[in-house]
Length: 128
Image (cartoon, rainbow, N blue to C red; front, side, top):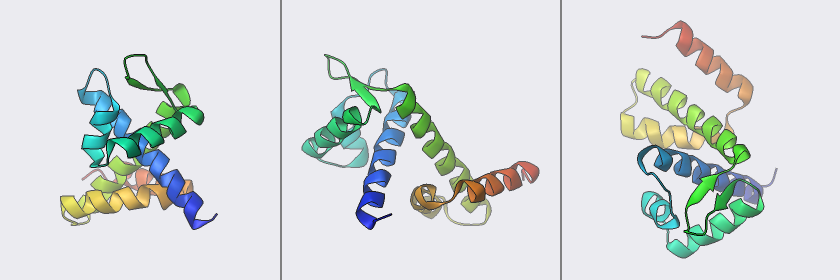
């Protein structure tokens, strides 16, 4: 896989994860909410939302509310689970929460399903 394609996939995953997280605290998510959360410009978010619509990951209502499609929600939940599990794991290993969160954001995109499932299984067997 080329570096450019990989970075593009990471961006898609980050946007979807952000929409999922914002949905937990906001009744309706708009482009400006995403821009503020990620500290991106509104035009950059608009381009990303067009891309996500074309890929079938989101829909945008007439009022400008961004909704995850079933496929978009599934991908967002997968990325969010990876981020949450990896953050907790790193914190348990003694990494500061700030660093653990930042590192988990990088790792969530690159770790194989096999390795992730092994980490998750280990944490379930060793809850403390």
